[in-house]
Image 1 (spheres, rainbow, N blue to C red):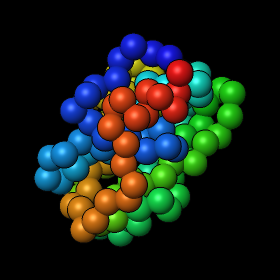
Image 2 (spheres, rainbow, N blue to C red):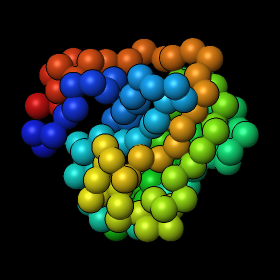
Image 3 (cartoon, rainbow, N blue to C red):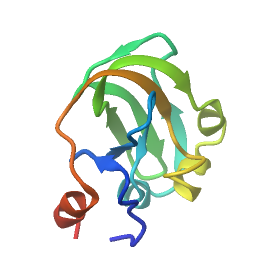
Length: 123
């Protein structure tokens, strides 16, 4: 597993991360980015869309496969990372920084894991 797993973030079993700011920022983990390989396409919800914790909110396509994105939270999308949509390789290069995917004004969260719990599921 990749050593990079920021302790201040929370994670889902589907390999998304979420910070604890308001609005929260959502992205995919380095584990997911590494497993996908070269990401070539990102499809995200639009600003103003409502997302539901655990529900599919988009997809990421790589040279290897297509994977669904799941929302770790329920709320309203307030920002989408247009730079990551325009250049999906940003997600591979910096999944916890410039490769973030969307920001959501949270109503509630789904089941979230600590960095330690996530790491234990992804040895």
